[in-house]
Length: 245
Image (tube, rainbow, N blue to C red):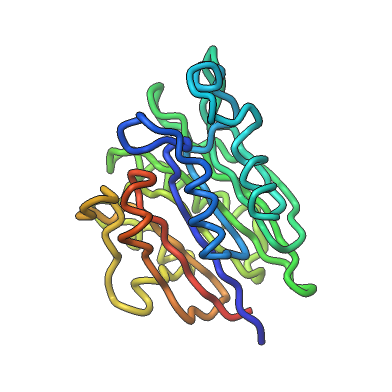
């Protein structure tokens, strides 16, 4: 049996928490140290013409392509929000062969454009489904989004295929398990430690917002990356799970 390392991280569009500094290189170096096999990123800038003009160090290429080149990973991108100077969304990157499938629109209000990026990977002949999600701030909105995710999983995915659902759930109320547990999904920190780690704000984490769920996979380890350098990068902390394949 082999293992697979999955990391989920809201990168705040490659900017420091107060949007004063471009931190792309620091993010890339820190993530290279983690060396994930699968990387689920949220708040990825596909294009931002204002920042390209304002900051010399802001890459002109899309951030998912930039991270793919920096980390040596194949990438896929799902656009969630579009505006006059660009767009942003979720990106999934993989060390294994990656097959982009669909970007599921789970937007439920005009202000928060959200999505679930569906990709599939091949790990030594074993197909695995990767769902990379970013959910709303309000619990009543997330209830609708949990249902949309559940409907997609039950209606579009093979029940027997190993599944990873990861992302920024904004689940400060810690209710996601109530809605997703019925799908056979297991949250990795809950499985190993009985609780979800605080991941926000990165400098003084107090709220648990980020999740990694798995199905038909054995959880071997779960880590929240805190302290140096993570506290000075995004406003979230990244989380990592190691599963047996």
